[in-house]
Image (cartoon, rainbow, N blue to C red; front, side, top):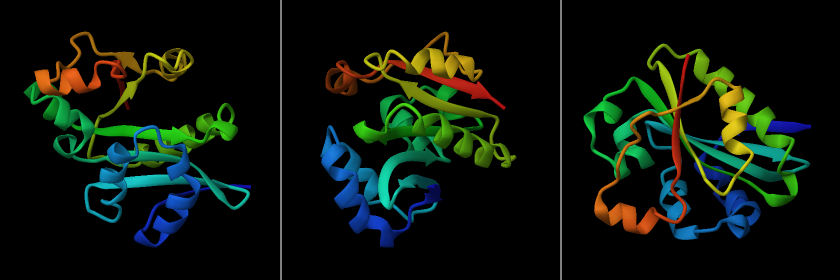
Length: 167
């Protein structure tokens, strides 16, 4: 039985034990995990057989999201949208878990009237992600946000396509 829930500060020890060993860039993710419980963002966790196997960050303020750190282009920052990401599913649970988690989060977000779009990033290296998101109605931004030079240098290797989905 899978369980999906919003992380609390009391979940930090389990997050460190179950999820930290799977992180590619621990320092990047730590800055978000240290913010659990703050207003304006949620960390959605999925538990399977007593272990945490997935996290997804949801930012309700685009300026506080990774998108806000990447671009200051007003056309992106002033949208009535939530930003979804970063996410991680542990290697041994990939495949079947994410569609279940994804549907759960989308259904939770659909109940809000505070936004009109969900914005997420699909990474080039994940060949199944882009067709998956497109099947669910996400569309690629025609004019993708351009990060500042400093961010571009840091993220060129893994930054990819921005997608959005209108409710």
